[in-house]
Length: 106
Image 1 (cartoon, helix red, strand yellow):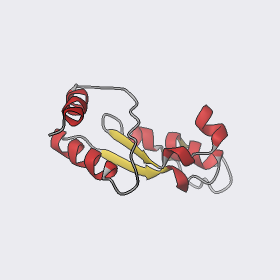
Image 2 (cartoon, rainbow, N blue to C red):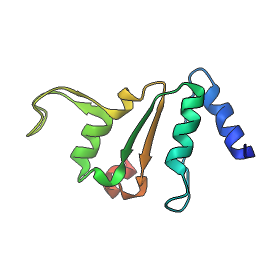
Image 3 (spheres, rainbow, N blue to C red):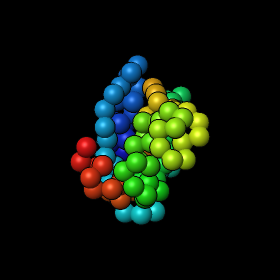
Image 4 (cartoon, rainbow, N blue to C red):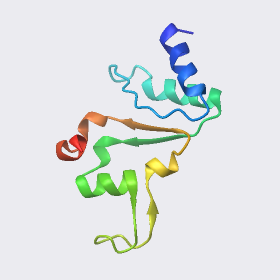
């Protein structure tokens, strides 16, 4: 196993690690598969999404943090956000650079 993967595995092995990690690489190099396989080895849940699927700031905020019924047009039910869903696991946002610029800064 590559040294950087072993280091990542040691971080993820902590009881409650809370940190952000940016994994860079060209398309098709196995970033998603690599983090998923590593999480499975460690018994951690992985919640995957694609930043390009968030059409605007409202949708990005709703998907990441959740919302209450009636919070905006189309919010017919309460919804837990992806951050809550990934609690004590890994939230993998592919194509994170495509998030709306205003939201990405906040």
